Image (cartoon, rainbow, N blue to C red; front, side, top):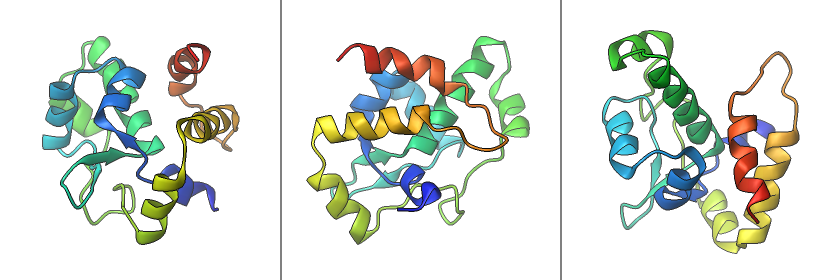
Length: 136
């Protein structure tokens, strides 16, 4: 599976994202309202987040902690529209794959994603998400 497709796969419900990012559901919905993230929606309208969404949320959190307001964050990070390539999508293939994955497999996939080095990009989420990996 291509790296970008895997990173954009809708996998995490909001409860998991809250644990990974230490953000509240309200904060996550607020950032979605301001089009800083665009999680996918299931048929039942449940939000599903990708690795890219989690990474963006951690970047937003880091900027907020540094004192940057939402207007500043919007200038630093381009807003994401539902049609953009950065928006998390639920395809039939990714939905079947997500349903087949156990928590252990999802955990392994998260760990692999954190350990991979992407050329020319340093991720701020690596240190923060490794806390999740050590709790298991």
